[in-house]
Amino acid sequence: MAQNGNARRILLGSAVALIVVAGGAGLAVRSMLDPDALRSRAIAAIEKQTGRQVRMGALDFHVFPSLSLSVRDVGLSDMAGGAYTDMLTADRLTARLGLMALLHHEIQLEGLTLDHPVAHLERTERGEANWRLSPTSAQASVRPDAATKQAASDWKVQIGSIRVTNADLDWDDRLSGSRGKVVLDHVNLSDVSGEQPRIDVAGHNEKGSFTLAGHTGPITLTSTARSGWPVALQAAFSAGGQQVGKLAVDGSVADPDHMKGYRIRLDGNLTSLARSRPWCRGWICPMCAACRSGPTWWMAARRTRKAARHCSTACIWTRARWMRGATSRG
Image: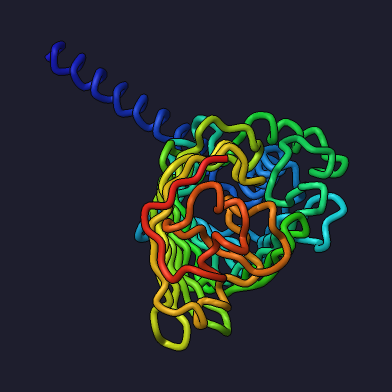
């Protein structure tokens, strides 16, 4: 009987301990999943990581089929002195939320989806680009309170993959003289924080459509300093319902922002120079960067490297109708 009594007391004590632990864990999870608290932490963390002001509507949690969140009216401010109030806006953001990561003060978002985002990209004549972010910039968090400061220092946001639908993108690159706008039907980015993120893009404008797929080196929006940033991309262009051409780029670039320190191989073809004009207008190939007198495109393989320095004799825009195996360094 004594042994049975001891066994009952042990079982009862174990059950009480489990209830206490489970209750404590439940309170901790409930605290972490408080929508207002998590929204404040996310805003503070993003502002610290980007140096920009963040706008975010009310945050909602969804349990089924998996733990996820949704936010409406999302915005990230433009750089100081930029042409727009916000560089990026979206009607709605949804993402799966990593529960265990919250225990480590990390908001881990997987399958992040942006509905109808609008992005304005610009670069000044001095080379200042609004897509380059400056963490802990003075622009972010105007006079944050103590709680916000603590949240910013303790929490961070990590993104695993991104999906964008129905995006409006426009750019004004005053350094190169290129400007335009396109609609991105979809953008899929996987392994965003990894060493080799993969890209899948499809878009169009009033002149035609395009696709872009492949992978690059790590995506870093806070610094231009790289050592041999790898790139392997394939693009296809169509106009008037017919394919215009294809282009494959494989190699590395040390300074993608200014197209310096590049060592790339180009393979591609054009089926029609006339139909390619909408896609080529305003773009200058790295080999022809010295010539800015008008629309140019990629160097033809049939030209010599010496001749390739001059757009008037080397660009397929003005002379050649195809290229294969062109290699460039700079």
